[in-house]
Length: 122
View 1 (tube, rainbow, N blue to C red):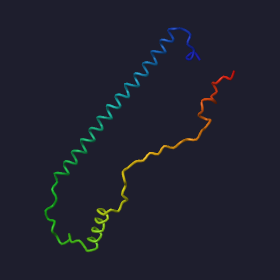
View 2 (cartoon, one colour):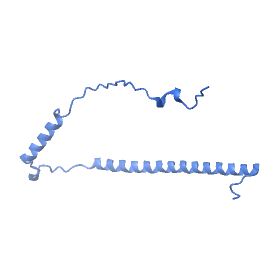
View 3 (cartoon, rainbow, N blue to C red):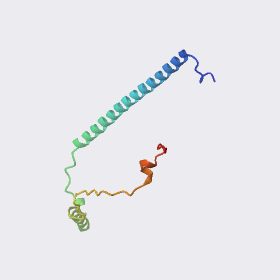
View 4 (tube, rainbow, N blue to C red):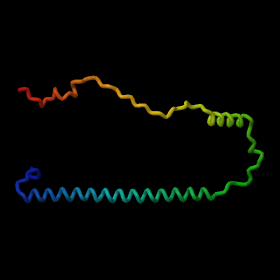
């Protein structure tokens, strides 16, 4: 149990120095970890951006008028119904007015200052 026993001023200085070294080492490791995480994030963002740029440069096929592109009447009805529901007023209209009502609280002795334990009755 000599590790927990500090008898001299030099022991206090050694323990304090050790604690400071540990704290600054941990902070340095955290800074390096955040720096590395930022570099990895930037690399992933650039890679995704370059993939999306490549996808934008691909041109669609110009052979779009084939016999397989015919849309049946059921599909036209489904699309028309979906568009009608999307553009019509299906949702409730909100007034966009926020009302805050003040509620009066009942008296509670729990938060009353007169019942505090620091009051001395003389």
